[in-house]
Length: 125
Image (cartoon, rainbow, N blue to C red):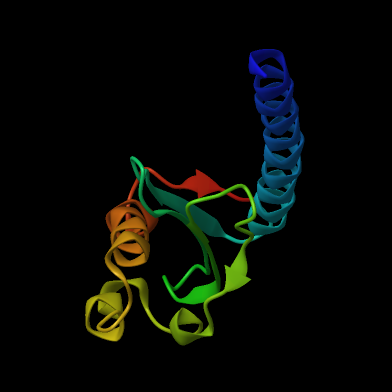
């Protein structure tokens, strides 16, 4: 009985590793896309036994958000989804727009707002 449980745990661990690989591959693909913008910012909130979030913002030379995507969840099944509510908005005015969004997502986005308008942003190109 104990050996069978160990085999099941090991198999689940392998499956989780494979799914994590595809999640990282998805993240790298999105990051490559965002590097084509004038500026981009990545914000993250790690959830400890709770929901985590990663936000990627693509910003033009006027500090307007051209593209925004968010990955939020507690498992390896989470994938990026578009956050249309931020597109076309200036990076300085997103505080008021984020009312009603869950806390991990809001924190991930706001953690990049300062960097995206300033120095800590990756330069695309």
